[in-house]
Image (cartoon, rainbow, N blue to C red; front, side, top):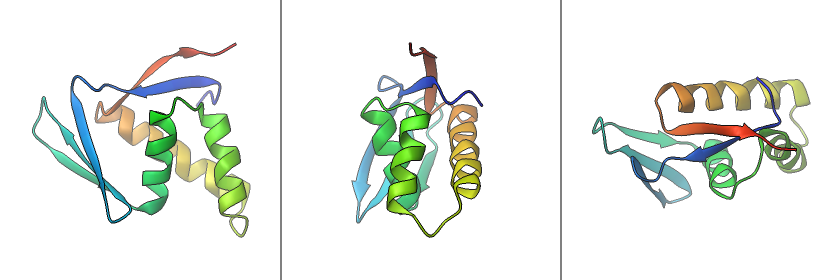
Length: 96
């Protein structure tokens, strides 16, 4: 995954709420609900703020210093891939 790409939540097709620190996401097209744990919710919020994955990874490294960078990256990339696959986020291009 190219970490310089930027992703966005398609707010025409997705709605979400943060409840007790966890994101509950509804895909309005499919009717499916999704939930994210606290780490996933932090990633989701940063996507919504317009942060690139490389910036998100940097923030995760600060917040989870006890976790190896490669593990954080692997887990973040897996989540982004899942979110893309479920059409909860969309790639909006490379940032220069």
